[in-house]
Image (cartoon, rainbow, N blue to C red):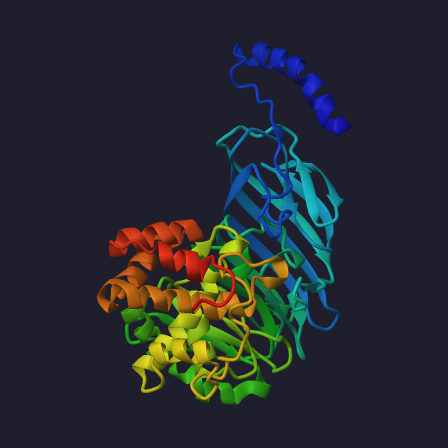
Length: 469
């Protein structure tokens, strides 16, 4: 606070100096601090205000032998206001230095907030480059629901999973899904290890120092919670789908059989998803399979979901569907999670309907009656709360978000018929491609696209309390 006050007091003198050197005082910038959080309804300190990130360039060096991570993050962003300071989210890890626009910047740490004060205030609209050098042994975080996220050690390396805020355990950034950016992630590891991330592998370079450098490029916008880095002695397979989407999967040796299971049908599933939801939204697809028991869940990390052990067909379809619903069309806030999970769950229902299993109608009815012979999850507590209004952060991945969210979609299908419903799914994915959307955006879009008043569905199924009749 003292430093900011001194900066404001010095502003007239700086303006006078500029007048002497340029003959004009119009370029004087008097910024104010960017917000240290975006006031998300469930994670109010997540993300930061005052700027939007365009690109992350992460240069990481990791050795599984000692668990130490050395990183340089170059963050290119645009100021949305004149900035005297701005924040980055970073958990643990030691910051060794920060520059902004090539000049040394002052910084300080308070909890998970790294506050950066540029040598000169940034202008509104200015594109600026921040470089952060950091190192340390990353530590996982505990989610409100008790799950672990962040940088997770495995039997022979590590894997990064970031939902909702775990990415701040391995790189500094604006860690909220509303701020999407492109990525270049370079990972250096000891020879004999694979390093896998999002997007396409641009290069793999064997150094003379016994280390290998992997350079990954993700040109499409990505929310930071969907970024991943996995280091281990994986078996890698590559290829292409019939429509030309690149395939790159990395499977832990202990899970080698996974490649011959449902994951082996991934090319078929990508083609099926393209028919149901529109063209696949990224240049590549694939999977990262870590040893069973590493995580208690799978995560739809962009283009390359992470699975803990060999996944079922339903799970592969679920995480694949997220590439359209959650990854390409990302939530504006964590309150909108049913737009991710309800859609991906309904994709499972559509897959079985199209491949000789129970229809979506049969699975919908199974949840109404609790018939686990039709759907093994039908006895879950799907009516505990409305999917668009989870009670708290511990509930954003709870059963109603998944199953009642899927039931909302089926109710729309019942109301408007198949032709309009599937046009709605494809249109939603196309018209919001690589962007962000809220529940209010979807309800308005659904009514416009179908030409129907769907208020009763919203009132009863999406926002209503208790079990719908």
